[in-house]
Image (cartoon, rainbow, N blue to C red; front, side, top):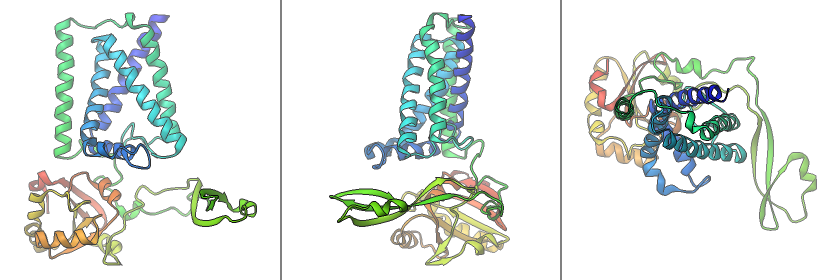
Length: 366
């Protein structure tokens, strides 16, 4: 019975680590954005790690996949199980911290393929920890499946394939797009809230300074305000989240004018997504005018979408001699559309027909 439970734990943990790792390896840049949240000032205040977020993300997801493979084949079982235990302990701490302090809303455990709430993520890690502890106390029952030579080849092959996959998706596109803006999506339709959709329950929270400390009060608590309390701010706290459409932050602005409906109403639209103009690939940006002229000759409306400030927009216009529209959009939405900076998206009346990385511009089908 003990052997059966141990082998079941081995298969369960190994497969789950491989699946979780491969989903994140499909989009390591997206996982790096999650790490940026953890490194940000409001959470762990480790901004010095932000420049290395992508490298850390790649290391963690490759480690997940390789450890899953090593566990399944029984390769260096003592090292493998110790590594799994340390890794899942770290993940359990992070998901508990996210859930308890209500900071990172989605840990990104399964990328964009499956969204879990912080408490769901924490529960998942507790279950994983339980099965890994079974493996930890029964390490002697984890036997290798093959000879040492084959074991070494399989472990090395998994590492090489993971590094190749990571390199490919960073320099091109994810092999599978799980995001709301995948090809075939009609943006306008996915922004619509059905009439019978559940509504959010929102509570007004008032912040007052009491004896030099900011404290929160609900509307019914206002009558209990101590004397001398000074009003600071008011915010809305979501008690129950209502229906949130798949796309809810796509709004295009041109110097204060809402251009969303105009763009989504175009039969042919080429959108150049550069969420940060300062960090956009210079070589790709230098080719934009030539591309815009080619697109215009074929009847396309062309615009750059960016989350950069007006000062950076003007600087980029001057640097790259951009004479067509540069529309402001929330940077988070633009990062969700595509990870490359810039990337190129073709719309037909709001339906996404094609997306390409700047490295694959030759594949753009105008």
